[in-house]
Image 1 (cartoon, rainbow over the protein chains, first blue to last red):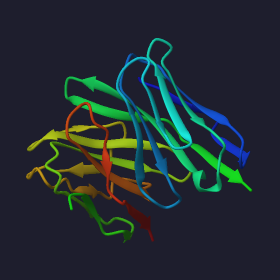
Image 2 (cartoon, chains in turn blue, cyan):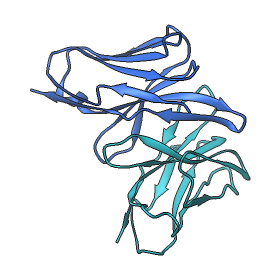
Image 3 (cartoon, rainbow over the protein chains, first blue to last red):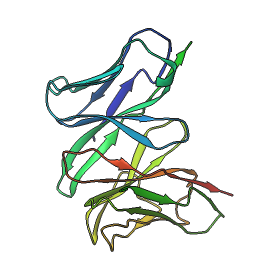
Image 4 (spheres, rainbow over the protein chains, first blue to last red):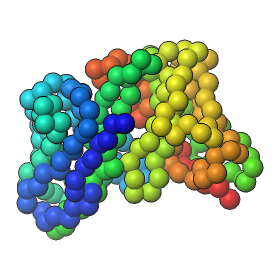
Length: 113
Length: 112
């Protein structure tokens, strides 16, 4: 059974600081996705990582993928309050019936002034 | 504009009742998915469908049923056999295996 583990699950940080969220997974995959969810809302796609060594950046967020270590990171640079949300990683696996995403538990980020 | 529409946004179910959640997409996506989210938790897969007239059980299919008679539509029925249905339900679709999912806005189901 595929396990996707994120840490930390809760993160409180000050504006202007840097931090990294980690996503570990237990099976071979070279497809990993990051999503953002605001309270009571749906999921918004942030990054799609499609190969080992992939790095994507958008604003203050940067995501990377190491398929050999089965690890993805989401790095936050100089955090601002607007980044407060829950962040999910999701790993894509293929089965005989097709592909599916398995999600981590989410990291609830709070950025304080 | 293309998108994925879930309805209703809020739904209340009485004990012993079946209810159906609607999910429609006009993105021409082949695959569709249903996830359940409980407060403070991640998403768990209920059912998914890669093509019309075919669907597969996910990790928590018990107490739920689906149909896929049209490419655009993937309704989820929460049956009376689902003992704890109160949750946030998210429908998603995807184009091919190298693309992530597009999510609907969700349906919040509450048992009263």
